[in-house]
Image (cartoon, rainbow, N blue to C red; front, side, top):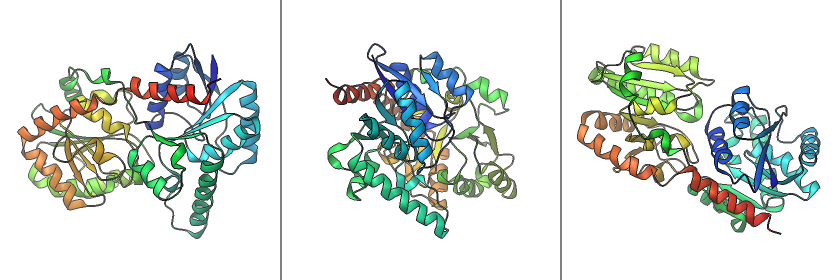
Amino acid sequence: MKNIAIVYDRELDVGGVESHLLSLFRHIDQQSYKYCVIAPASARFQAKGNALGVNFIPLPPFRPVDLGAVHLLRRAFQKQAVALVHVHSPTAAIPARAAARLLGLATVVTVHLPAIHYYGQRPTMRAAFGRSLYINIDRLMNYTMTDRLVYVSEQVCRECIELKLTPPNRSQVIPNGIALEKFTGDDSRRAIRQAVGVPDTARVITFVGRLDYQKGLDILLEALATLKEQFGSYMYVWLVGGGPLADNLMRQASSTGLSEVVRFAGYQEGVSNYLLASDLFVLPSRFEAMPIVILEALAAGLPCVVTDVGDNARLVENELQGLVVKPNDVPALANALRRLFENDELRIEMGIRARQKALRFDERQMTKQVELLYDELLAG
């Protein structure tokens, strides 16, 4: 059995990266590989990992250029007798690859979001200098200290190759996968609707994700405000998740008369139940790679309205599993939502095709591809 170190720089709790890791933990061949997580992690996430046989080595959050982190990671790799280092963020990848190189360890970096999107959007000179510095360090290490870069998004992989941010001969795509069995029934539909006072005849739009700038929820609220007069009597919107813009978005909803329409559900453990109780899904992001939540919405049989960023349009083919609009386009988003609200037949047809599309993204298939990569890099 060979030990694989999962490295991350921020607290692991809930989100797309966490869902991805739990899929690996559930299905990796435990006769061949054992995971340890070297990262800050919440008690909630640790409990889930421990139940799947994963050890956790606590580490404080660290910055991209952090010699102290290099030292701590090197010691942890030695103590855990690590055979391969598997990193899941550009920030963690800088010190982790340096530590792995000192020990001669194989290194894999899974790119959930590339470095060009990872270091914030602040317009200050200092922030711009920091982004440029980190992106170029990441580029150098991609070419010199990485055995394989795994992209979850075909679009992002292609863009990074075109920009010469990643070496083509060591870059590959392994799409995200989900636990499809969580979305096999809709018994919870009526119970959830009753619990939050939503009638069976209502149309429910659901968003699931972090309430931050990336997700474009300010654009969604602007679009919903234009639909309120026409559909307000039976339009319900669930925003499931937490994040730094929660208060701002609540104020925006209030100021545009959407307080009775939009429900801020906060973090929910049972996201599948909310999706199964909905009528359509929306993801108005400004940028993405390959959102796991779209896979979950497809598996729940929901027609999806998404923006044309990352792999969104590959997962939701326009006019087949839903509708695709440009990011930051309020009228286009409003028109797409209006069209699905008004056409029951189209919504049902798209939902059927959504379930069929989701079958391509079983987490077992994803994990098997990762396992084959480990086999290749650790052969002999």
